[in-house]
Length: 77
Image (tube, rainbow, N blue to C red; front, side, top):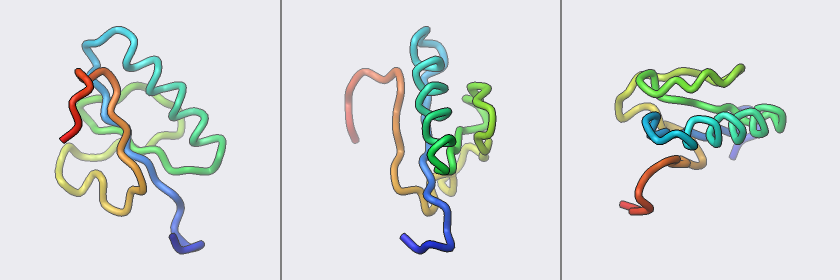
């Protein structure tokens, strides 16, 4: 990754699973402290200070190094 572009991670959160938002917020805070851009989808805003809220569309993960899913059933597609 270029030094000019910040590292980015998209957090995808099943907000109706009780533990998922808190776990995502904790990871988001740690990533932000490590100078990583954290993105969350507009429909899943977990209230993570410093996170970038992005539109729920295919562009949400553009240039992200990683997408982390919280609260799913464990299925990876």
